[in-house]
Length: 322
Image (cartoon, rainbow, N blue to C red; front, side):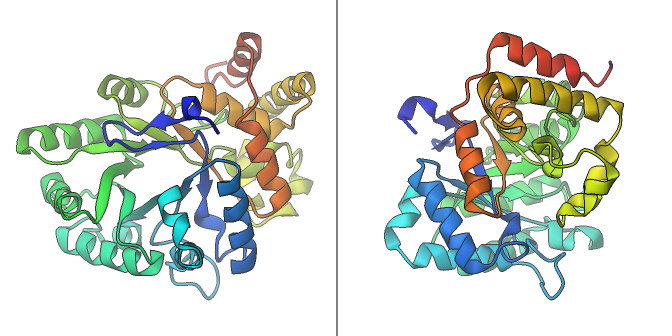
């Protein structure tokens, strides 16, 4: 990946290659040896940003959260040269979200120390507020983040799952108090889920020059073309989430992906990722892989150049208002 392909994350001084590895699968559908192999190949391909969270993967039987960070930390510790070649992204607040007050200063301080221990590093490159906290004053959250930046424990901060109003309020609070601002946002965004990002949130991100790292970039695997009917939903652990996409609009999107993929001798999922990479204001999509074969497909997606006709076909097929 050459330097021209790198994307800046706001005003943080951090730039990344145009694909982020989704570490939610580590310790869930991927064991530690396979995780190491995937991360090695990802790095060897010239990619560098790895996304995780302190709550990954608490939903898996027998897990309590932190498993993904632990695996990444073990991988980093196995070769000291890896840390300086990676951009490590993690998040705080989700584990306590249901109880309220997930982003209090005390919770953030405790969470970052636990994440640093698991990741076996002295710094986190981008530290996200995982979900908005309606209980804690935004300035308290930002002051806690700002303190971490000043201490060098965190290089930049970000906001995940914030809408335009919440993000605007946070940016205003940072400016008024002279605190570190959210430099990166992490919205759900893909060819199927376009409404929540396109519009005021995207406009604000572009106006403020923020980095944008999208999640559910393949709509839980639906955009790979793996799921074509309800009979396909048992193909993976994520299959249960995909049923909602199996409707006339979803099938129209798959048809457009198929047509574009054939024109480029590519796979539908590669086209879906390439579409995101080409979208205005998007820094990089997050995508996960559970095998080297899947990862090779993601790597190919970063090299796929869609034409203006390709982009128009995909946008027409996925138009939420159509």
